[in-house]
Length: 184
Picture 1 (cartoon, rainbow, N blue to C red):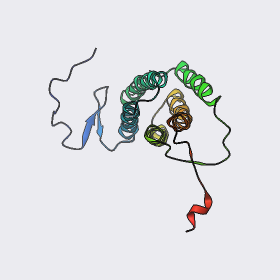
Picture 2 (picture 1 turned 30 degrees about the vertical axis):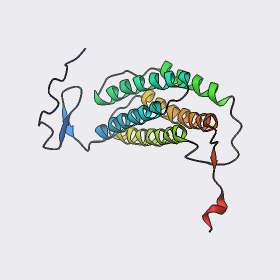
Picture 3 (picture 1 turned 60 degrees about the vertical axis):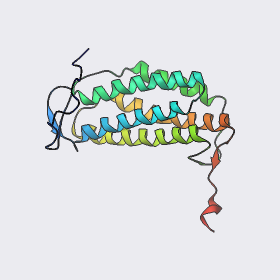
Picture 4 (picture 1 turned 180 degrees about the vertical axis):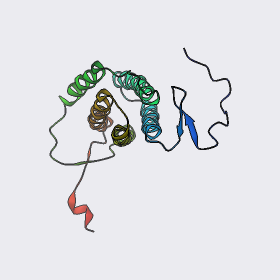
């Protein structure tokens, strides 16, 4: 295990810079910091989802995802590090297929909602999409492994399906978009 934090503040970031995992310093608004910051935010939203008490099997899967996201954030924080593997993406795909198999086909757009757990899962999905966009922005300037982008892309798909599952399990049901509601 690396260094343990015994003192939380260091004052080294007061100038608007932050340290990467390799010891180099960059500005806090650098694309790399934005990307791993959004991954950290996503992990926090998944913690909120877990606090909404999803079914135990789903909670275990979400916890596994949290651990993998911590690795993904580490890969983004330490340039040149490889922590996300194809097997991580394959696991997401298998999990996605398993949950999606019992859902009816989509015929309408779904609005975020359907109970607290489902709504929180939708929030996680949107934060995941932002993390993916910010990682793409980073990839335009610096090397980012395809596994990182693939993981975030597949995870947002899984979170959409999990939100559908949770909305149905909660009894609230999915909230379908209706065009006529625009006109009042």
